[in-house]
Image (tube, rainbow, N blue to C red; front, side, top):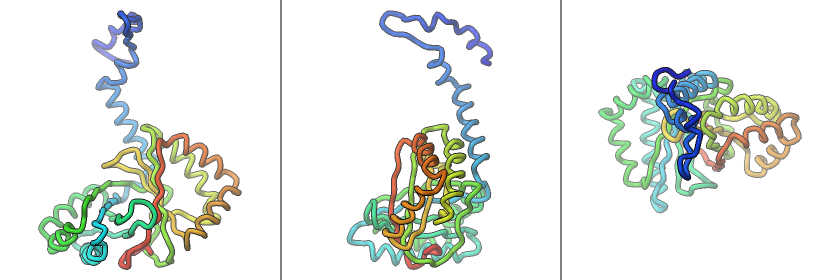
Length: 266
């Protein structure tokens, strides 16, 4: 499998030297060949499970508690401005404020025409008329982050609509190398759950915090959310899906979001 010096590795490396022992596996795991194999595996998984047509930027802004009203006005000016500018070719999927979870936190999803579209839009924004609107938001923000995500192939994001209610954003931190397993298990279970509710969108991270999966749901209210989740446990296959996917995740997070007035999804 390995050429050159790696062929000279022998079983003697497994024998203790003093109080310490070295394994062949530990040496190979950190080798350039092993790292390249893991990167290739990740790329192959992304191609298998991803839709590939768009890249979604998840922008998170943490805002000063006494400046949320000013932030909302500034954010509306900026995000409506860029989505309505045909030269930028960027779509605003939605904008929300956290009700349950990290307080005074705002969340925006932007859709780009793959990485080339993201590069072009980012470059144009720096010198466009929208640069001033962006700067107007900054005094109200204490921290901001950006993560680029790809849609799961079997579940494109929902088109703009105004159904009302609340949104639930669930984030799972997967163990490295488990994305394909996750997608296989979750895709089968979600078909059953569609009897009661369908996700608004589902994504996996590409740049930023890695090995993360997100999915977004919409409910009339928290009580309806509870009822729907209880109904899901009566569906054949859902319990198996939850059991399998939970074994692939290191941690899970849930936030309840309220759409902002200018959000295309609300």
